Length: 346
Image 1 (cartoon, rainbow, N blue to C red):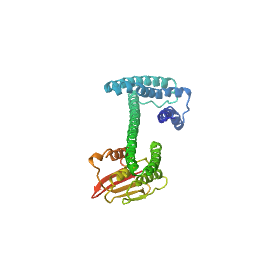
Image 2 (image 1 turned 180 degrees about the vertical axis):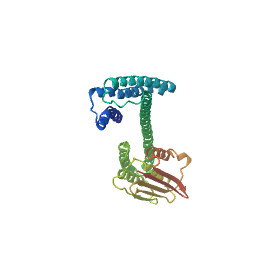
Image 3 (image 1 turned 30 degrees about the horizontal axis):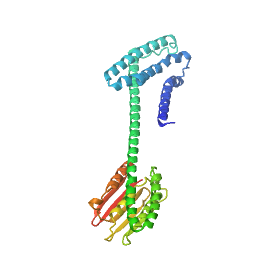
Image 4 (image 1 turned 90 degrees about the vertical axis):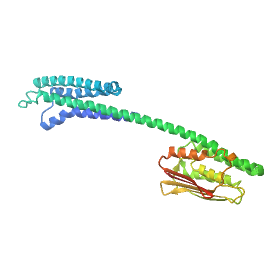
């Protein structure tokens, strides 16, 4: 059963219970007063809840939608005054007839309250019933609109995430192919192995990237494989340090950390100057994942900035959609090194 159907079923169950209580009032009071309930006795009373139901559902099904929600407040109030007045006078006439012919003997010596008081009481209670009908409909409409708004927002977020993921795959492939391309010239055999390793990475991207959450251990395995692929073309002088591990049963959105690692290999390696890359990725306690990437900083030349900046911008957008208010991403240049730090509360 859909959530909407469950809510509707619950709403009508509440209606049924409420009217059941009102129809059952005579049995409760009769047992306290010691008066037996006869068919004639109950027939006189049963028109009371029927009158209240009439006020409630005329508003609930017709006037609220066709009058009140169309901003005709004065007309809505006037219609209710006329309806409630007519029902009160008809109900009073019926009850007067009923008291005179059926239960006068049973309540001899107990004159009823003044007619004006009875009509005023019924008018006020029926007015409250109309107000209750409005409150329930307004609340129901608000809940429905809020649910629809959330569904639309969810659809928008999913569409935006899908778009960002589609941007991520070509960006990742572009950077990795650039690295393999540089291998082909001086080491074709190594480049061949690199293409095979790349196929494994792309397989992960194609299948795991379609899931909302993946085990952190799988994400770490993917990053380890990527680092191994990147090391193939690095000069021996480049120092790469990693401190990567994961606790069990921790899941996270896929491909969040690879952008930081990519940037480190793209901007942190020089063929002529000492270079280093330090990657730290692990859980902190039970509810946080921490990633810190440091690298020596060698800004790309103007003609070599294709794709530059897309990754970090994409990452920030994805984090905002996936972990709103639950992440902190800091990227800054510190002297001759670049530091990126990401914390995610999961």
